[in-house]
Length: 301
Image (cartoon, rainbow, N blue to C red; front, side, top):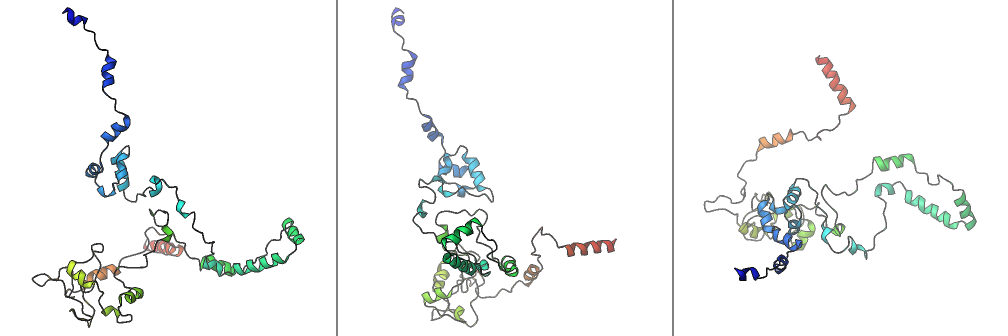
């Protein structure tokens, strides 16, 4: 008992120093979810990105991103390079007036006025600055009215949720191009004929599609010889101008669609589509329509 009392007790501070303290940053990394775990916890794993796990509330962030019509945060928020830094060396073209304003003849008037201004002496220019004359350019009112109320065109605008990013204006616009429609330039490059009977010649990738199936990115695309009937006067086969072999199963049924054109068109559905009212919902009625409705109500009473 005496020896136990004589043994010196270790201070509390020394025991704590032996265990290294964990910093807050390391604690956050240990408690942070991985990308795979976050994808399993949310209903829309397709919107999860690698930096979403570093948010304060990752589940709430993914829920906000998955909400309909949510505009995403611009991509340059995490870039080290400054925004639009790559456009510094590109020469910006001068502003060009729209065509409907050029039709008023304002450019010719400005050019003639500038020529007169250049021919003046310095004394006349100083006098003009002190007492300027207004109304030098006089455009016909009818031309000015037609320019903005008849010939004006809408500028190019982005749709809701479509954000601008660096180099977007240099990308090719594929709005005019439709999948399945072959342009004359493409037909010429592929060695296909161009003219009124050009649709009777199959594209070179048709045989591969008949073997491997239609393109998965366009499930509703109608391709003659694959899931739609071939043009009149054409025949299947591997000869020149032939449309390959129709994709059928062992019993002879088409695999991807009505390739033989045996099913009758649904006329009832077409009749229903014609009767659909396609006017904008909530559009204000004209005064004449409102007056006619009021007269009908008065007659009914």
